[in-house]
Length: 114
Image 1 (cartoon, rainbow, N blue to C red):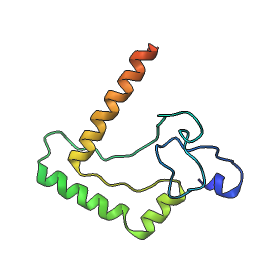
Image 2: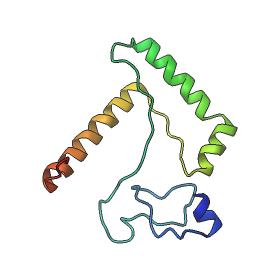
Image 3: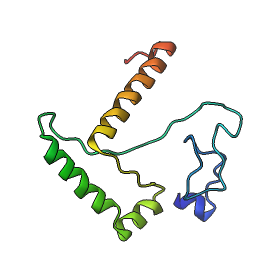
Image 4: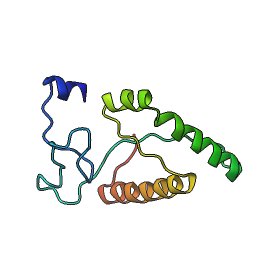
């Protein structure tokens, strides 16, 4: 994002399904004619699988409180990150859908690890 804002880099499309609020004038790849294309990066916090639900909920609430502080949000936005918080259950569902989506890509393209 800093390179786009400085003019060193010209973005022609966003790989997300919707335009980014940080750069709303940059169209999506789908808008550029590649329908259904979506890819992106995300970050999440992992915890042991035996963590209790109340502790996981408390950790999520604290993390959400941190990333939504104005100074933290501003720093993340400067790097091009948009803040989206999810509950532990929502994040688990997201992981599951991502694994399924990318498993199809790997299988359909016969990708192999060397």
